[in-house]
Image (tube, rainbow, N blue to C red; front, top):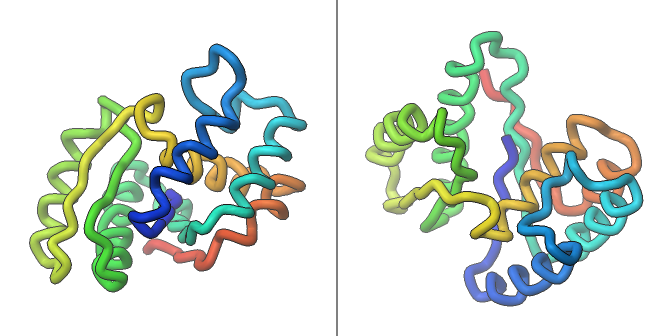
Amino acid sequence: MVVVVVAPSTLPTLRKELNALRMRGQRRIHFAKESPSRRRSIAAAIAGMPVAATAFDARGIRDARAARERALRAVVADLDAQSVARLIIEQDDSLVAADRRTLFRATRATRSGLEYLHVRPASEPMLWIPDAIAWSIARGGDSARRIAAVVEANVTVR
């Protein structure tokens, strides 16, 4: 799981830049479906953006549900420590109910009053950045090297 933090004042510009990276007729950028040359160019563009990413690695937890729950709790704690106000999560209908239960419990303990919402990636270009980073980290290679500039921390979730 990758979380990207941005200054709210940069959102309009970043969204415009991300939308400009889409191909004609493309509703969103989904890194796994892009060609290698497109991945290189998208990764290079993201590397130049004023964003800070943290990768939460829960691969050591065998149960997928438990891994996601622990990763989300770690994300909330990290964002609370940074006084982040809002968390936007890519909407996967099969995970929303469990996510909401986890996030409700986790955010009750925060100081920052973190709010969260699930959004489909076609309607929020900022979700394309963590998708690209997560794919790049998982695959390694050129995209991972290009995008490494914005990954400020790697957290092992236990």
